[in-house]
Image (cartoon, rainbow, N blue to C red; front, side):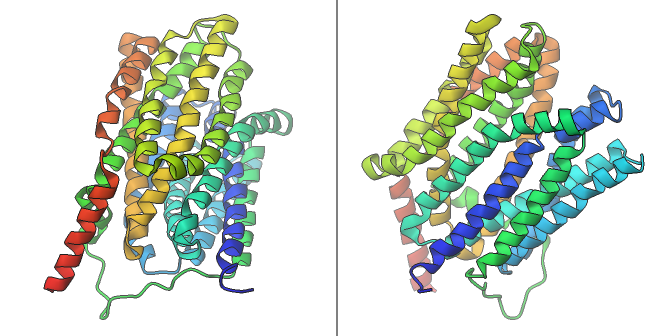
Length: 419
């Protein structure tokens, strides 16, 4: 196989690995919460602990892995995280089979999987930058984004049906198998990633090294506003999601399947947006696409505060979610591409790890805070407040991406010539 086709071939295996593991994760959506409720008779506090603390602690534990992974080939790291996730997830059905499953074990597994997820996603970004030509990065990121929304649309309904027919731990087993299949697909990719150059002599990992990813993001004129905007937008959107469940299934009287339908169908918008992103960038440029799509994704959620009962309420939720998810589907591939293009190869893992860890920790913190707010004001008021705050987030979007990048490149060049 010649060098020009090699990157596409290797990305194909990565795409397959990403697709099967993402579908497995969505297939097992909320599995731990349901197992805690149905099998362990856990209360709301324990379920909330699983939902918030597991990902937050996993994000913290992933931080020291960024500098460590930076100087290692990324494909073996991805395979290792797949095998780790497979092993810890299989411990759940084994403990269930011998009647030894506990909430504490679910929490440990949740933390481990969350840390491995962040590490895997950061390694994916670095691997994509190594094996995909620069001019094809947006197409590759669009395919990954389409895969994510397809899995989100199909996985939870199918997983819920499987759990109802075959038992509470079925989806966890399927998720574990998906990671095993992902590891096999990555093994078939056969390398292709850059072998990082280590400093000589090799320095010890210092406490300050853990902050390298954040330092690079916050010093970048282009990445800093995108980072702040994305973290806040995603946190506010996810913080209001549990409250919408409470509102729809509680006072408004929607059945669980109606709630699932209200969020499965709009995922088609993610597919549409991801496929449109490359064409929109070619016509309008990345700056305008990020500004318009980033603004639109902040405008939709306020509509959820006005949901009512019956068919009209269901249609309103589906319409709002379709608009929101379509905007996100356009925005995310462009963001991912600009982030990879603007980050040096020897900083990609640390940058993506810091970005992802901050996002997960912020979502956990805002979700907990908005839950407390809803207990004081009611879910509808809390949803409205999140939507109102989102309307201000476009102010954080960068205004001149290309100018900021040119200034940074000029500064780096002057520093090198001066050295």
